[in-house]
Image (cartoon, rainbow, N blue to C red; front, side, top):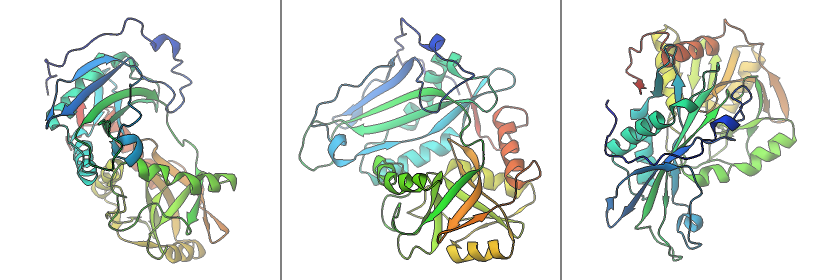
Length: 354
């Protein structure tokens, strides 16, 4: 795909790149030099621009600040072995972006604007794509309701922004999680499948409570009876039980994770058994009792794969065996990384090379 030539670029005068120690990155701390901005008004998207990264100016009555019309995506660009840059699975991310925006009654940027805007922005800030093992350039496209009006209404104006920033590997060490049965992340018929801001804000309190108890994240259960596992923190979750990779099925309360989909495809193609089905809290307890569960891990864009060391169920800590190169999570993670970095052929058409 060729870069869109009619997106004007206003280059920054003072690059911040020399202020960053790429060997000691912190997740979410650094932003690259430029961002893409495009406004929607009078039923059309206006001219996109790439400008120096800067603060946004908001009227206090901006609708997004009051009624939650804000949707984002989380993506990554990787420095490949040959030095080129790969933006991973833009098509899949755009499809999810559209579903989220539709659910929140928001204007949808055209696919060309989304994809070619990302390509042009990454090309502009290509020096920011890390070369360190495990590191990548995080890409954050988002849309917010920009109309200034304090009455409850669907906005008539929106702003589409993309910014980027270098990030390290997240959750490199196994984590401890707690099954949450009091609070819920999402309910049937709600917005759990959408990447809208309210989903994340509502999850903070139980997560903070779990961290005070010594856990890194929570395992969310269903919003009906709290019987079935849905997600791990802000990630999808997978279990290896009786040599089968099992993950909860997608629904309107579970995010359609791009990493989840990628790992399921790779696991099947490597010849392992997979099941997308409900996983109950009771089943997990029995699996621990019978020693039939050998792995559990969260999967998502930020962490890629986060192995789980401990799961607390009904006030009891259950421990997973130690992890090593022979574990399935390690095998499929390495396979995914090899495709992203160009070490193996991309037979799936997932890579978009800048």
